[in-house]
Length: 87
Image 1 (cartoon, rainbow, N blue to C red):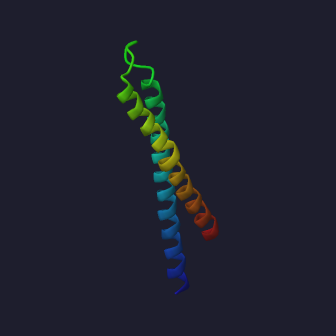
Image 2 (image 1 turned 45 degrees about the vertical axis):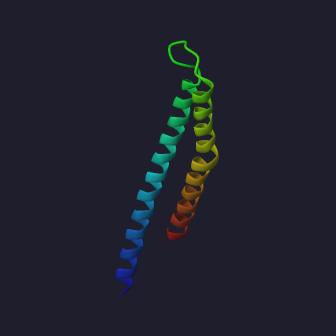
Image 3 (image 1 turned 60 degrees about the vertical axis):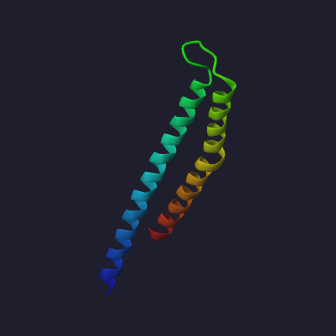
């Protein structure tokens, strides 16, 4: 019974570690997307962006910074906390 309990705890810890890596990967991709969008704001080949395209890019950057990234950070902190309690 004890052995089985330990095995389950180890499996859960592995799952949490995998989830943590996945969240960190997605955070990194969000940060990269933000950087690409910021570069795009300067225009293409020296051409200015239309106000509509500019506002679309700014809206996307705003969404990523205020909604997606903080959500991923909260999930990461929760997983780290759970991993700390398991070990």
